[in-house]
Length: 263
Image (cartoon, rainbow, N blue to C red; front, side):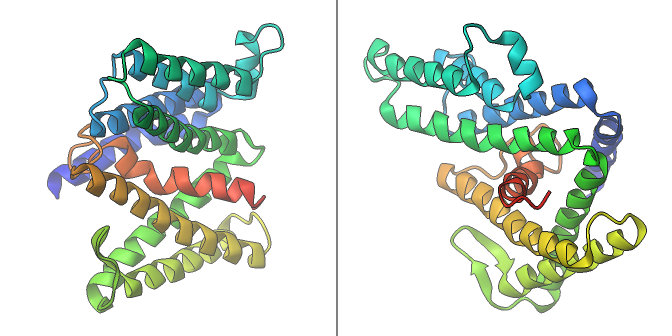
């Protein structure tokens, strides 16, 4: 627990000032986090980070994550983000032939899925910060996720009896999940009192969506780890695990909120 607290304080001391500063520094941080996230997933699949598939994974992730105003600097002949991604896909498929199926079609599928999962999650993290009220929104969503996690943990421990999804995450309960949603709504309403963002109805909707899909994002990461037989996605944060262990809810929630046009 002591190690967990120390790591959390140090990570917050590094992360929060960059979130507040925003701009290119925050974009660079997001891109670094995305690369680390890809590294963690590739390692689960036992694909070398420094192999041809690994390097292509990084490039494809950058194509997805990089903001539009940066991407325009690297384009020529009117290449779009989709064009670059398609080129990367074709190169990945070509590797199955070059390696004589040592790098297989299944691994191509894995790379593409992880690139889209991690890439779009961190892309929308950066896009949220770029909004006119992005700092306020980002802290709002972070508070909702923290409230959901804390509420689910403490209410689940105190009142949890029925398992939510034991084959994926044996400690989570239905009572804890509902408690997490309730805590997110309460924290959202309190946040609105001090830093108004939307009307109260919108706040409740955003809080519920964030709490529900935040827990789904956490379960998705648990499913990944259980499938590949690992306890944590990485070891970069002692006591907490990897980057994806800490950002799994956030990078799942933000694309949903943007798709539903709630931000």
